[in-house]
Image (cartoon, rainbow, N blue to C red):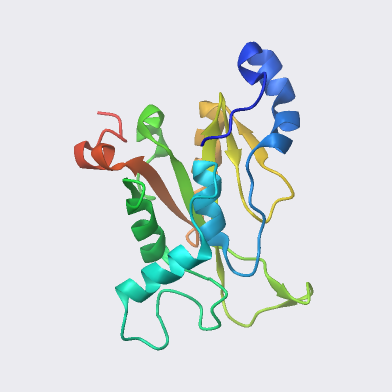
Length: 201
C-alpha cells in the first residue's frame, strides 16, 4: 500500500514545500544492503516492500536456468542485478521501463502519465570506505512523486532527498542526462508504454 504523508494534503503549496524535508523522514525508504540497490530502487519507487531478494534471484534463474554464473547478477550472490531483472520485476506489477534517449530533451515527458524513474549512475563504493575498486560499478536509484513533490529515493541516502515540483524535477533530470555514464529509465504502466502517452504530443 502506498505511503501517504499524514497531514500533508491539508497544507497549502508554500507550506508543503517548507515542510517537505521534515515529512521526508516518514517516507518509505529502504537503505542500502549488500549490492541490492536494484531491489531497493523498485521498492522505494512503489513505496512498499513488494519485492524480495528471492524474487529477483528467481527471475535470474528463469532468464538463464542453465547458467552456473548468472550474467544478470553478481557472482557472489549479493545482488548487483542488471536492467533485465528490473524490467522483468516491473512486469509483475504491470509496469514497463522505457530507456530515455539522452539526445532528446526531458521537456517532452508527460509527467502526469509517469509512475517515476529509475536511474543508473556510477557507484562511489570503496573497499573499507577508503579504497576505490579497480573496476567500474554502477548503482540504481529511484525518483518518485509523493504527494506534490518529487524525491530522490537513493538507498545510499540517510533519508529521501527533496527534489521539488515538476520544474525542479526537469532541471534535476536535465543535469543528469548531460553525463555519458548515467542512464535514465522511465517507469510507466503497460498501457502507457503501448500508447506512448508518457511523452507529450
